[in-house]
Image 1 (cartoon, rainbow, N blue to C red):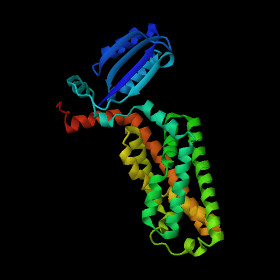
Image 2: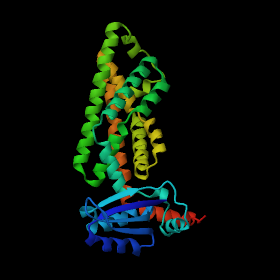
Image 3: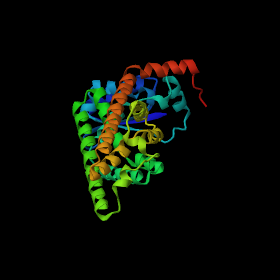
Image 4: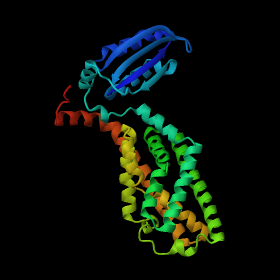
Length: 320
């Protein structure tokens, strides 16, 4: 797998950048169009780079000032059906599917920490589904609520911020997480009060034995362990862009179900439901942020060496 670099550069940086791209065996298809960039004024340089080596190339581009004075755009081609691409990937240690482009991770984290209307809408809808799941004692609806919830983007952003020392990012993501859950719980709590006033929801529905959904407000050692494992899996999926894995993370932890149960508990002022749900919610968030940060920190230090070692242990990839 290759990554395509598109750079707009002032003319005095074109030659150093081209020299940089040409002297490495993991870059190819280096092209230059002098004067092609109108705003900002300068040249256009493009190249294809082995995904495993993008971080090194970006670090060198940063060092010579290309990221500060020019524009750098990374894209992933949908296909690279030419022989040089296979040879290029072969020259870079590790597997491209294991490669982590840290600039992309940071960009995704910053996006996850932005307060968007769509994320808030999904959060409210997820908490509504969770509240209905509690009323009906439906484990299927619990899973549905977990999948709809967008909270891991905020949790992942906090983990990334901790690892990179971006404290404003940490504060923004945690504030968004807390305020988002608080708002969603208040909205669903208000709807629950309407249901209580009309008789559609009764206290018996909230406090009755619920064998299918009882776990969402009874935190224990396993709750914290699941949060740790899910946070680690989510951080790994975030780093290597395995979006399919994220679905498994979403349905592993009970943040959204706990929020739904908390909203119902507040509407009927049931102390046990409120306390248990609050503990479950806090345990999940703390566990996921902590384990996510640990996994990302480990990747920053050891991942490149581990992927190269795995390449040697399991054998070199063969060019088709």
